[in-house]
Amino acid sequence: MSDSGRSGTVGGEAAGRLRPRGLVDFRGSGGAPELLSYPPGAVVVVSGLPGSGKSTLLRRWSAAATAVDPRDVHEACEAVMPARLPYAVYRPWARLEHVRWLRAAVRAGDPMLVHDCGSRPWLRRWLARSAGRQGRELHLVLLDVGAAEALAGQDARGRWAPGRVFARHDRRLGLLLRALSGPGGAGAVPEAASVVLLDRVSRQRVAAVEFRSGAPAVPGARTAPAPASARREGA
Image (cartoon, rainbow, N blue to C red):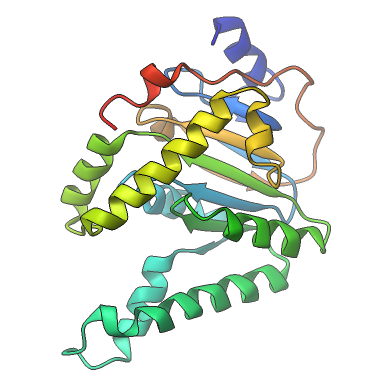
């Protein structure tokens, strides 16, 4: 990824603001914008490994949109269940509740932020179809921090995904990242109007999102993905 590609992307709009279209890669770059700007009513899916910082980003950005985080659903279900009952018993109900929350939020028509592990393309497709029927777009923000950083994030928050679950997410996310690095790039996620790739450093820079009308990004302002060897260190 060349320096000219990075500056071209950020220069698409006002300094510090970017309206992403197509594939935009800020991994290994100091040029990530402070603000991501999306069309009114857009659905923005934030994906990455457990512990990669998805919930932190959603909290940082939640002033701009309704945020749907499965952790919130988990806690809501847990609050009405007997304390002695393990979560594994009512996990299916919690997952159904999560889908119900998503459906209700989509129907409301407001801009949305969605927490997702990134290994369930059916969920993105369903959200894209549901939003598309209302004339709204789906966008993806993908956190690529590597397995070691994500595991450290789990340690820091004091919650751990089971090893086999984490390994499955890591494998599926790796496949998606390799597809994004291949010919066609963003064509690997055809349901998304844009895919923004962030690493540990660039995720700290993007302080907020907004949802407003405005001119699209300048054509040709998309960046190419970094080499897989530079991205998957520690995975």
